[in-house]
Every structure is written in C-alpha cells, then in structure tokens.
Image 1 (cartoon, rainbow, N blue to C red):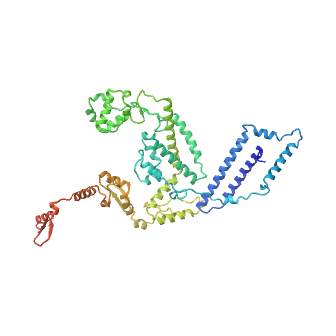
Image 2 (image 1 turned 90 degrees about the vertical axis):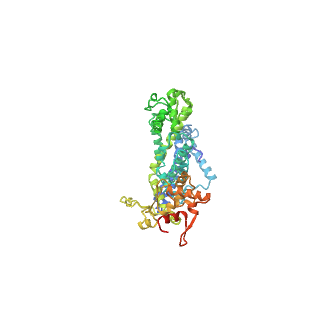
Image 3 (image 1 turned 90 degrees about the horizontal axis):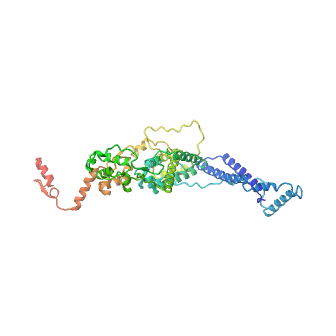
Length: 506
C-alpha cells in the first residue's frame, strides 16, 4: 500500500496534520514550573523538526524531477480492460496490505497522550542553571593562557568576551589557535541558545548577517579587514620623518623609542627591541630599498613592495581571513541575542562570592521547581539598589546587615597586585593564592609562601625577604648578637644599649 507514490504523499500529509494537532494540544497544557516549560518547548521543537522533514519530502515529490508522480497519476486513468480495472487492482493491493499487516487499525483515532508526557533530556551543566547562565570557564582558561589573550578575572571576561575580540592584534588573528578558540566559542554559544531557547530564530538572523558581511567584504569595507587578509604593502603609508636629516644611528636614537616605534610601524617593519635595535632597523632603510630587505625585518601582515603572492596563496589567505571575520561577527551577534543571559551570569558570579555550598545547592533545587511567571504587562523588572549591594538567591539585593556581616563593605587594597581592590575579608584572604598576587610576587623575585601571608606592600615584602635571606646565611652580627648589662642587671643588645645610654636613661 505504501509502495505507491500517491500513498506516500497521503501519509506525509497525514503526519503533518497529526504533528500540528499534537503541538496544539501541547501548548494547551498548563505548565507550572520553569522545567516543565523548557521541556514543552523541546517537545514542540522536536515535532517541528519532524514536520520540516516531512515537508521536504513532499516538496521533492511535487517537484517530480524524475516524472514518477505523473506516471503514478496516469496509471489511475481508464485502461483497455474497462473503467474499473485500475480501481479493482488498487483495491486488491489494499486488501493484501492489511492481510499482511492486520495490526494497523485506522478506524479509531490514535492516542497521543504518551507523546504529550515525554520528558526530553535537558543537557545543562551545573553552572548553566537550566539555561539561565553561561558556563565559559573552559573558554576563559583558553583565552588567558593564549598569546592573543590577556590576564584578568572571570567576571570581567564574561562581560567582555565579545568586545575583547576587537582588541586582538592582527598578527594573531591568522593563527590556528585563535581560529580554534573562535570556533569553540561560537559552537558553544549557538548550542547553548538552541538548548535554552529551542523555539528561537537566531539561525535566520545569523544567515542574514553572513550575507551582508560577505557583500561588505568584497568591497573591502569591513573595519579592520580592509586588506581582506592579503596583507598590506610595506612603506605604503607616510611615517612623517625625514631620514636624510640623520647621519648616524646615534642621532636617530635621540628622537626616542616611541617615535622610532611609530615610524617602524608606519613602514610595516618590526617595531620591537631595544632603542638601539629600533634605530638601526630604521636607519637601514635610508640606504637599502624596502624591496631589497630580508623578510625577517617585516612585521606580520605586511609584504615587501614588488613581492606578490600566487593566486592560490591569495585565495587561501582571503578565505581564512573571511572565515575568522565571520566567526567574530557571529559571536558578537549571539552575544547581543543572549544579552540578558550574559547580564544574569555576571550577577550570578557576584552572588556566589557571598554564598556557601549549601546555599548554592538549595538555590539550584529551588530553580528547578520555580514557577513560570504569569504574563503581566504592568510588572516592573527594575530593582532599586542605590548601595550597589550584591544580589541574593531571589535576585534582589541582600540585606545591608548581611552585607556588613560578610564584611563586603570593607575594601582591602594590595599594592603587589597593582593596587587592586578586594571587597570583604573572604575575597582578600583568598586572593593570596590567585594568579594576580602570584604574578606580582614573581615579578618582585619573592617566593609566594606562608611567610608572606597578609603582606600587601611591596616594600614590606622586599624587606621581609631580605631579613629571611640574612637569617638563612647565619653569622655573627654585633649590633644584634652582642649583649650588654646595665647596673640593674637588665640585658640589652648592643644597639639598644647604646641608644638608651645616649639618651641618659641608663
């Protein structure tokens, strides 16, 4: 029965109507908790996917590229055996089908109740809170430990991970590590959106964004990618410096390191190194044309005048640059779409600083049983928080007495960390084992051990380290180890004894 094309068409139309009825019934169900609402959306998304597959099959049948549908319809027409010959042939096929499959009952409506009670698996990590927050710890570690990243707190990264892409140097954007980071971040954000908002329309917006960006790319009007990844020609811009006025490298050194750096960057040459190296590199261009310089002198992203890439190399370079540009644009767009989630994630990070483990577990359990809020046009989501207090488990500022109890109103500054402020005793004590303080101690050449606990001043740390080194060396120190006794029998070291005697106290 199902072997004819017309029967397949009828069955597909029936499946479409059945899926539509199930979706309507599902939406009519009353959902009370946030988890129930999320599971309902996932069920509907699954039915919509099945409808799209059925619609695609129907479209291919109606297009009839191979002419099979036309042949099937023609087979129903009158034949030489009479008007009813084709009808009885089809009737025979129907009887044979149900004789072979007697369990297929079509006289009664199918029961869809079990489909409405399905509980799709919600794949969220603990930090994602059933789609309320982002979990970017893996990408944060990849960013701060890469050459194109920088060192800062996770709280700051969550609020600026999309904006930080604009600050990455052009030299690093062509690296494999940067592209892998972008692909991983983009995949996570898109997958999170599909899990948290299964009925959303973000993919359509991303497709439109990609079309617009490609049109702008072909014109070379994308900010930061005017060269379309092909590299700029060295010496194409003016440096504002007349090298003929300088007769030696020493004279060039007199204009300063920053001015030399600007001139080298304007010519497309490497601008690093000492003052002497920069001056020598710039003075070299006075007698040697840029096209004759060794490639090692040019900065990444610049090519020597007269040197041209092959068509194949240019095509690969442009395709790679376009892929990176598209990933950056898609990440920025997804960040805008998930703006509220990003904001909630930052608030969640702040709130966790004043919570114990038991409070976190209790909050997660309450989130699973949270009721779906009723639609209220008059509801005002603004939270009055003039004192900038951290948010509590209910999303509202914590009481002021609790704020003072945790000591969050006390600011602790650490000079070793670059005068960074820590609010609350708990955060201050914890920071001695964090990377910011460890880097500061390493820069001072001082070990970060228990001897330097609670030490926040640079001078105090250096002085303590010097005393520890002196004690470790041993030996006799006259001012400290030599003892004197006064008339009353009191014993002092030499330095204290001389100070008291000079003042006439003994």
